[in-house]
Length: 142
Image (cartoon, rainbow, N blue to C red; front, side, top):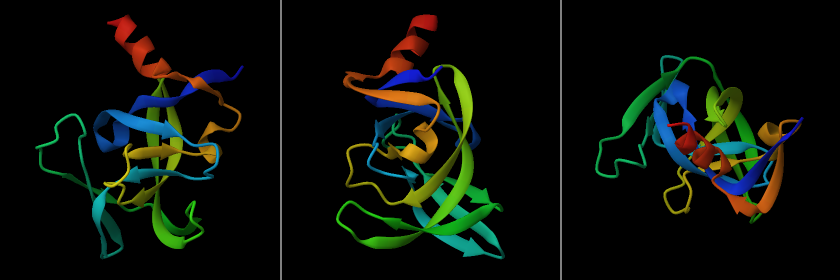
């Protein structure tokens, strides 16, 4: 049975060491993306700097990936970008799921993470009237 998710929430990314990041659910987007900067490939390894939104003044955390690819992503304005894509995990409603994330500089965006249809498909139904269902459920457990 599919779980109901609202238009926004907070999710953790265990593989990246990031917790309670604000996420926006976007059924118009196919892929999911996460905010990071300074992506570079050196010796076949991808390096990217991630930020803990809960600690705005903290230094970025550099994470390395040996398993990555590149993909073309068309933005809402029709612009096509080549982006790095990584395989990672996301924790929602107390469950850890596999997720493919494209890396993008989203500092001008309200939410550092955008969750698209590729991840939502067969797992979630979106109710745009609701927000933070996973985050609130997790807070109630403690």
